[in-house]
Figure (cartoon, rainbow, N blue to C red):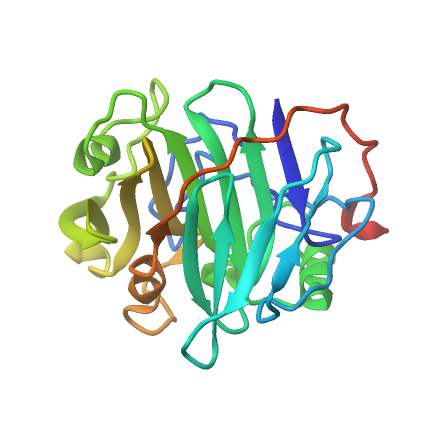
Length: 261
């Protein structure tokens, strides 16, 4: 059972579906094996600022359970720390990033869940949804996706990155080199685009909690228009927390119109 919580009336929906190969082109869907770009509207939305010290309870679009995800200010002005109790991590994002979508798989599959963070406002997200159709837009280049897998075999981050998650698919290390790094005191890896493609950070793979966390931009454009190191600052703020149990599956909510219209 995949349950999805969205904090937007229209989102680039993240689902736990596997099988699409990643292609290295001018626009690269760095998490294409786990992302489809479609918009949906939940029955209700939250409008809480990420810098407010309070719990935000997202609304489920495919199940009735709730998941508590907190956002609180940090000691640095202009940053907010998000905690994901079910997936088991916290991360610090620069303003105006905010949580866009949360997905959890309450079954036993390797894919446990994912979250996406965006800099767009609710209005900007709806306008993008209306404009984009089903195709990815350059605005997604700044979106950050955190994919969470069950690491039942307790493999290293390097081995995980080098192993396709589905038969016939590509590994996260495809067209990238692997650099060992330490994140939260853990032996993680940094994925770097090959020198012929810019040599910029493509993502991170971080082991913790018997899980593997893969952090990537939702869309990569080469050469990148973003400041060098922007993703490194976010990824290295990753901290593991004790995971909470996933909510029990509930009947799916009725589908709502795309983009809320």
